[in-house]
Amino acid sequence: MKAAILYAPHDMRLALRDDPVLEPGDLILRVKATTICGTDIRVYRGRKTAGIRYPSVIGHEFSGEIIASGGSETYTPGLRVGVCPAIPCGRCTQCLRGLENLCPDLQAIGYEIDGAFAEYIRIPARAVELGNVHVLSDTVTDCDAALIEPFACVLNGQNKVGLQQGDKVVILGAGPIGALHVKLARLRGASRVIVSEPNAARRAAALQAGADVVIDPSAVDLRAAVRSETRGQGANVVICAIGIPSLAAQAVGLAAKGGGISLFAGFSNGELGTLDVNAIHYDELRVTGSFGLSRRDYEDALNMVTDGRIDLRDMVTHRYGLQEVAAAFAMAESGAAMKVAITDV
Ligand SMILES: [Zn+2]
Ligand SMILES: [Zn+2]
Image (cartoon, rainbow, N blue to C red; front, side, top):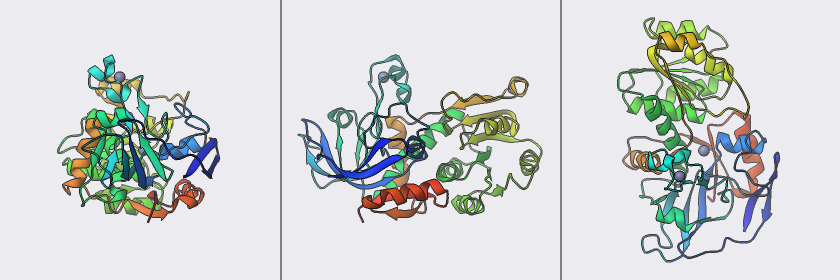
């Protein structure tokens, strides 16, 4: 089959490799759509190396059609499926405490297991048994299904920071993740959604996604602007959708007393930041991390999209065939796109 093989950081090329081999209980999918994640770009640039093998195939946001099934009666050839890429062990203390995304033995498709920038992908029997595979309804497009994974990560982040109905919310960064945070915050009943983003096209996309106010932090004082948009109070929830330590520090200054700050985006290994610990203490701020997703987050996210409560159809702005994977990554890196998809159509 054809696959985009990551040989080393900055070296990903289309090549032929053996088709995946079906073992008992496995599924083989023909990949229908794979979207490029910010994490894929960090992996490509060598900024994220944990769990990455060379050579390997990355790509963890995908949907596909079953072409071979190793014995399952539920999952039969011809069905379209979405797949939660994170496969927990199910036995460790984190798994038992409902924190399976933090499982030390987590195996993820697109990292430890070959991913979806390829013609075909093997879904291991263990993922099939654990309920990671979901048959898609006709209302969910191939690209929608690929976007369930990042949307589920966003859901995890908002659950961890406790975003509630009536909250005034600030989202720092209006890339694809920021736009998904806007959509979900709206659905959860946020009373005001304020987005800070220096890129004008992305500010427009944030408004389209449902933001009430967009701010250009390169043109105005962000803290003053947020105060004036929140009647001087600050935001109940601040979401950092860009992994820059100085931005996390700024986020603390945007929160209302008793507010929450979600460090949603990943930082580079070894990066340290400085936070105003005095404000965290006296204003009783909560700083929450969030990493990846659980199987439940995936199912919840898929249900919201299947039932039409969240519309993801405007998220994919650029589509490429697998043979154009280099151009697709260049587009995703340029920042001129929202989501970039590799599709077979
Ligand atoms: Zn992702
Ligand atoms: Zn575990």
